[in-house]
Amino acid sequence: MAAVMLSGIFAACSSNFNELTQSENDLSNAGNTRAVEPAVIQEDSLALIAIFNATNGKNWVGKTHWLHSPVDQWEGVKTAVVNGKRRVVKLNLGNMNLRGNLPEEIGNLTELKWINLSANWYLSGKIPESFYKLTQLEVWKMQYTIITGELSPAIGNLTKLDTLDLWTSNYEMLDNYNHINFPDPKDPSYFDYQKPNKYKLSGNLPKEIGKLKNLRYLDLGKQGFSGQLPVEMAQMDKLNYLDISDCCFTEGIPAAFGQMKSIETLLASGNQFTASIPEEICNAETLREVYIADNQIEGQLPRNIGKLKNLRSLDVQNNKLSGTIPASLAQNLQLGLLYLNNNKLSGQIPVEIAHERCRLTFANFSNNNLIGSLPEFPGNPYLLQYSDERWYPVIEARGNKLSGKLPWHYIRWTHIAKNALLPQQNGFGFENLK
Image (cartoon, rainbow, N blue to C red; front, side, top):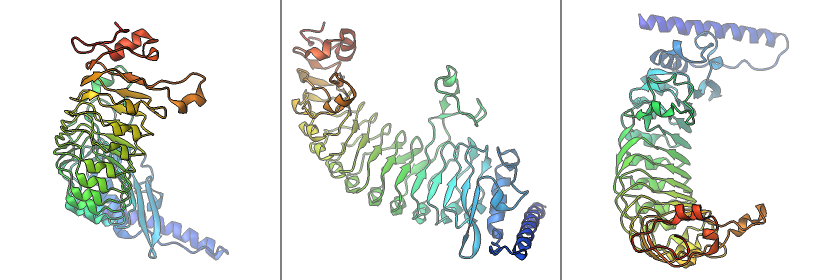
């Protein structure tokens, strides 16, 4: 019975398309020289119908033309002629209230280059194995769904991928709002929506992900992936953005990541890393942002961190780092944000990092075991173009063993200085800030 219904739907689509083709032929006969383009092939049409039926298409948002007009007029569908046949090349079904599981037929869209399934909070089940047959795929977006299961090793087939975005939320919102309009975080009732999200992708990342040599953007944030990061990921020479934050990865950042030639953003906070930050990471000189906060990382900061000439943000707060702060940070002339708080760092804050070319706008050294005086950071000379007054960086350094006399610009607003610099550990404090 289902097969008969599908055949009827496809026949209706074909009938509509034949009417359109006849109209185009009439125009051609009247002197129009434009060639009549072929219809979308049957396999692609049936794959779309299978997706529609499997995900409760009758209740989608914005599907007025689906099943009732030529396929290339359906919302979210883009077609093109490939090797003489009209194929589906783009499928944008984001935020359309898809419910149910993706069907295996999706793998028949073998010329698909771009797919967006994001913000469908009832899109569930696992990623069909046939999905990995979409070898022409360049963009795969699937944020904010409740798809579970693991990534297949067959992901290595998708060698043309440029963007893979599977980011999700730490919270599920299945029963509390309409899933089309996300709650405003400024709304006082926003936190009423927040329940821990148990619908996540999981398991180890397959090492075959390293075959995605054209990948530039990879976001796996807030999924349930675990185990060690595959060292094969270092083979992704074009990777520019990597977000693996708030997952369950263990061990630490592989030393091989220092071989990455294009990486600029590394977001890895909120995992279960324990291993020290490898010195080799300093060889990835394209890095601009490094966030590895909220782990259990031990050991010292890399001594040669100054090699990261493009580094603008470094966040390693809330770990178990020990040893001293590398003086080589003074060589990071682009560094604007520095978070070293809530570790076990000792020794003095290197005076070398408080140099006249310093671009720091904010630095947090709080809750370590740092000793000595607080260096006098000069005002940021690069902000003088916006103000006649020299801009000084905001420094926080509570909970250490600091002492001595503070420079005037630290204490000109006493209440702010107290919040940022006091209290120190018992027996320590500043002469001119009580």
